[in-house]
Length: 142
Image (tube, rainbow, N blue to C red):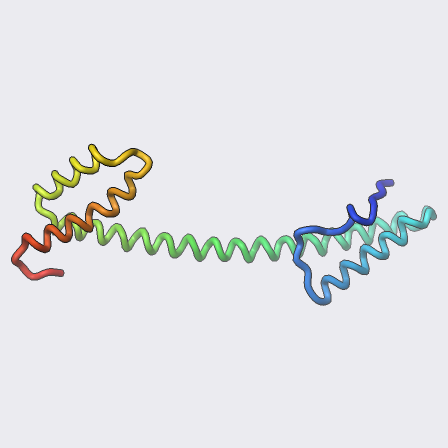
């Protein structure tokens, strides 16, 4: 039989509240009482209590994981929407920029931006191109 000290039996990093917290404390108290007794009949009861405690811990962990998955799904959805918005903005900026401005921008991106910060240069470049395109075009703006 495997025995554990009182400190090692405490469940850490599982958030339990209210009734479930009390139930878990009761289960562990009963488990400790059974471990202190040495009768052979208590082995089955100990196994049942351990199984109940594990089921309770499992349900709390699954609940926490489901909550985290929902948060991550929402963040992914927001990032996809933001990416789509930026792609549309990029397409618009490219259509408003003259070929000379696009060539100048491409040359600037290739010569001045280090590989790690190329996304920063790309993000700020189209805004400059839009400002230049707006100052050079005489047609209606979008």
